[in-house]
Amino acid sequence: MKAETFLSDDYTPAEDEPFMNERQLEYFRRKLFTWKADLMGDSKNTIEGLQDSARAVPDIADRASEETDRALELRTRDRQRKLVAKIDAALRRIENGEYGYCEVTGEPISLKRLDARPIATMSLEAQERHERREKVHRDD
Image (cartoon, rainbow, N blue to C red; front, top):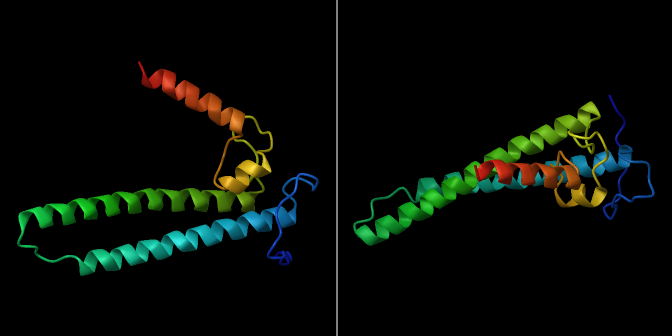
């Protein structure tokens, strides 16, 4: 079992540290766990809200509006469910020692990118190439 890494509340990963040292890994682990907890809390609130709003609305316009809101909420929750799966995958990469490295090139992903999008699996350059290829093939 690993010893817990001390991390101050104001810690931010810096470029002058060794890449993906214990402090950086702990920083991203905590960031991912916090993000996941927030999403799970939102999901719980949605389920409770949907259960409360499951009522018969006599006015057809009000009912249509409520069903539209409900569909939008469910679509948002589905996106968040997929995001939780990506967060879990990022946490597994941390445990496996693969976190922070591009899955295409094997090069380190910039700390700024990881801080902005901790579930990133590709460097910015690899992601841009991927999106350009995707756009070209989508137009076919």
